[in-house]
Image 1 (cartoon, rainbow, N blue to C red):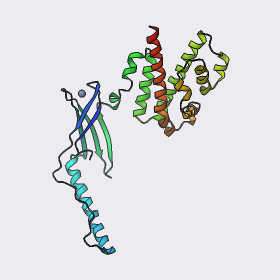
Image 2: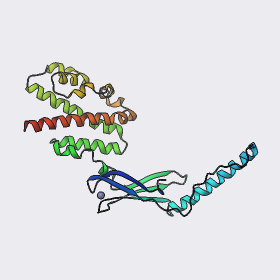
Image 3: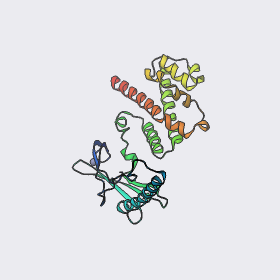
Image 4: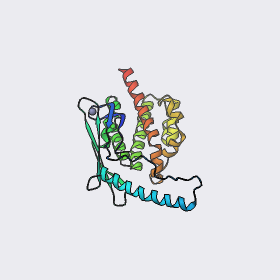
Length: 253
Ligand SMILES: [Zn+2]
């Protein structure tokens, strides 16, 4: 399916820098492989008869697999899939797979790299002045694409905490917060204190309690699965704070 069926999808092209139709043409097979493998011809199928057909179907499956392999993979058992954007430039992207000796399909490469396809930060790059935040968000995304969930999550936590402290500094300047209470409080209460005085948007006060739970855990307590699970929620919370800040900035101007 991956290699043989034509597929169209709407996706971001990193070279056009916008979303458009992307086409994967698929390769043409010399033989069609559509008829079912397991068939019986009598209504009162005896178990011996069934076993015979079952055996035959297994043999056919092996033959078919070998045939398919020969048609799809090159002599080194490598498969290169090419997709193309539908702009006039027809930008081409490649993904390379290797079939191992025990018939596992593993991805060994791609061009352009995955991160180039991630445009989730593009619109924020224009409004966020703090380049350190952009850099750390980018680092988080890089680690996430390489399945390093804990590392990625720690970057997000750093950004989240520094944003909370930034808001605290503003509240302090405006004499609107009990400084000692804030310093002594846990992250969850810090957000609450800021919210009570209008320094963080409403959604943060309603945010998923799981985020709070995971934010208050020590580094050594974080599991990979937990970090992956809560990554998007925390990232969205950060992006919303940034958006709010950008809106306020615009109003001030
Ligand atoms: Zn393109």
